Image 1: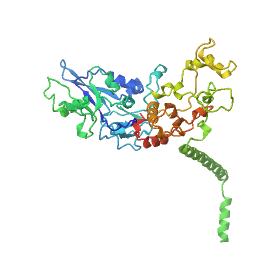
Image 2: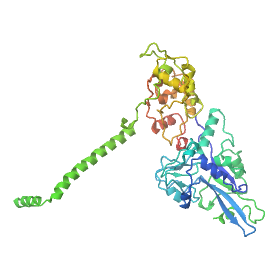
Image 3: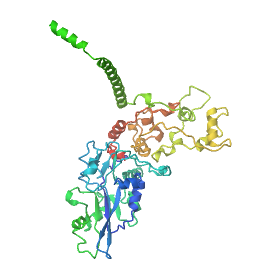
Image 4: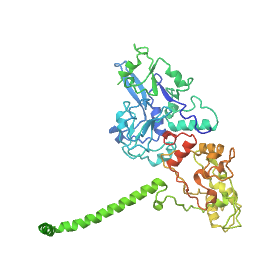
Length: 253
Length: 236
């Protein structure tokens, strides 16, 4: 078959090595540009209605002068057991066969139940029609739908890039290689803290990283089983730098 | 009984004037509501079954900046209107060059029209004169032609030509609107598959959308051919 017969043969996941994250915000900017996210003006920011499909949370640790900044990039966790999915009355968000938590913009009616259900606060509602200045209109990504007012949006794992990669492999008649599909945030990351890949491929980089003893997920007590997982920070000053990863994260929240 | 009738008459006499005015107003208003509702229902029903009523501009052809005849360029039959004009039978991909590799089929640059038309075509042809002006053949400034788009998908649909052409050329049995020449072949040329969605463009004086190209049509075909029917395959 020359169609996308491989559909469902992947399970997309992302690994975030918190140890490598420098908090530079390049991923945030790259995501903003890649996915046609409306501009966060000061007005919107002050109303707590700014949008960022990926954000870098910052935590301060210790007392002056021994202060340390901790960074953790947070995007949609693409939960296998997502709290946002069952609450949608129109099935605008659902889990697809490739492990993505898909948001279908044209189905969304804007109830905002999903955003209220999300424990990671990574869903964003378009309270206004997005407007770009004239100079930026030609910079919009033609592969990504522009969401109008009243639509919920969130990280899509750069699904357009996944489609593009699969299509390219299909047209060249070969299997998809690990690391061939890269998300926008991953492309921008200067320290390779973000790694995107296929968990069904046992030799992929994400599969290797999942075996790490620094592995943890966010808010594991909720049982959402996310497809985004984190590798804990390595810190020699710290007594519980490994194994007790869950406890380590919880003090940040 | 008689007293009952008289009492009703008595009551009717008491009907105030404002009520006598209000009742007909409400009746006419109600009739208006019925008419508007009926029009709305008719629009939704026709839209659901196929194209909405053409009053909104659907299922209509556009006047293009140049009356480009696909019949002359792509047609292979005998031309009725002017026997002196040959039918070239050009391949679709001769002009729509990116259709086999990219999302868009692509409209050729003016320069490509000019390859032929700087030497071909009578001086007197007014439509060709527009082309010569745009192409800068007569020394005028070059300027792209602002063609009007006929087949347009909604903004929330990501349609890519390349995989569709790739599949249909390898599986000719899936081609819709197929002529007898393609059935039974193992694989066909890219230009043989366009008619599945675009109809027989080679026979159109003015290009027109002949298929509804609604989601139902996409999903039917995807389902029949084992293509993904996941929402995120097209909507993202």
